[in-house]
Length: 113
Image 1 (cartoon, helix red, strand yellow):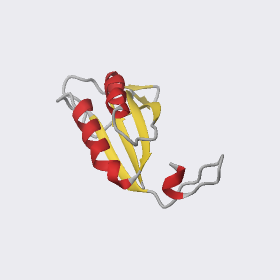
Image 2: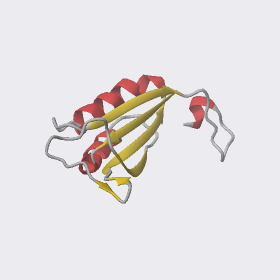
Image 3: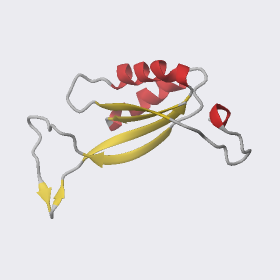
């Protein structure tokens, strides 16, 4: 099992979600509105500090738990659809998952996702 964590631009969420819906055996996604900053800001974007806080940029975080065989299809879909060609398109992280438990039934492992 894998955990895919993706950060994308907010205006790409609908396109990415629609594309992910087409992946057979994908059990679901979680979406969070977040804000932050990367290591490089765009050339024309001012870097401001307001009342000791960095001026954060809005992004969307998508979390997906899936079976190993789906990872490449999910990653390629996100990478293709979220791409704009501009800086700050986002990131995709993939981590292993040791176990999962479905609270309602007690199922464990891949059966729980």
